[in-house]
Image (cartoon, rainbow over all chains, first blue to last red; front, side):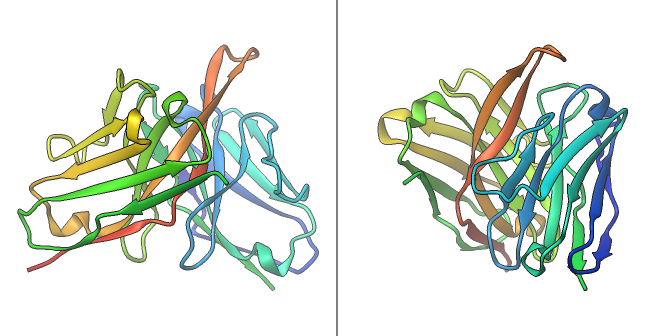
Length: 108
Length: 127
């Protein structure tokens, strides 16, 4: 399968921890990358590979992977973390990319 | 400053053509693969096409294969997307994105990620 599945929406209380997950067969072979997108803005890379966070991304963002599931964890969510989050990886061929459907994160 | 700036979007009739451009600056464009990614109104991100640094490898999503053509001019630090036989479902914001990579020794795979994105250009296909 070349699909990546995400929960459409997740909510978290301010300061609490939330995990956004992404499932797909290709994740057994390839790492995911994660993108944050706020309304009207371009996506921003927030985590990639096994354990890589781009410079400028707060260390409350972390990632993990197990089996067919990749996860993005926000530890101590802030109001500014409210956004859509997309996972991305390669499909089974390794040549095409696929995005998850996105998760809308609400910080309460 | 590392930057990608898309241009060329607009309103086009079904069956029409459009050419998008992406101007790169602040980095060695010729060293990076590039992607086009689009987002239809109110929808999620969709990968469209990839091109390697020397144009040796080119890939397309099934939804655009045969109608959209990716290319680049490393001398001009520019990426292009020629869009032909446009359909209403091609209406979207089109982003260009730089692809960075590293080799993961644990898995033996090269990890790809899109670390720089442009702000996008809007394509509307409507009669």
